[in-house]
Length: 131
Image (cartoon, rainbow, N blue to C red; front, side):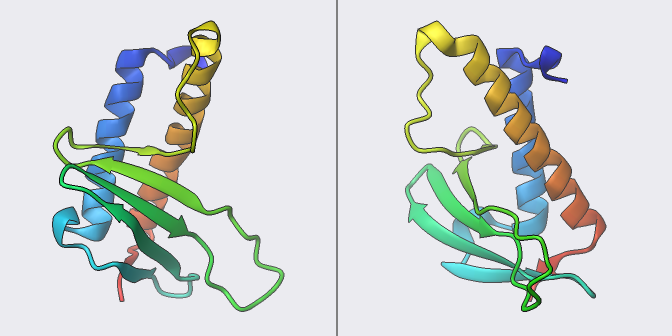
């Protein structure tokens, strides 16, 4: 529930997400500009580096690379990775929260990044690897 959506909990969630991203992708400073994660009998997942800075990395994650149309297409995920702070979060353009709606914004970021945590855990469970 988003009842846990405090700033501290959100930061902790970002750290957990970073750990899971590292487990899936390895050394993030050495990651190629494009790679595909694969698992047995599962659709591939495209990872593309959109932006590479000295302390940050912005990744596009395209969840389904399946040819069949009945496959549910998950939306693209933009992931911002902070290499120095060792944290990762779902990134949206213009996501700077206005003070007036800070609580709603915090809850929204909590929900999205909670989803990310569960999804990354699932990928690790399914033994997704770089192809």
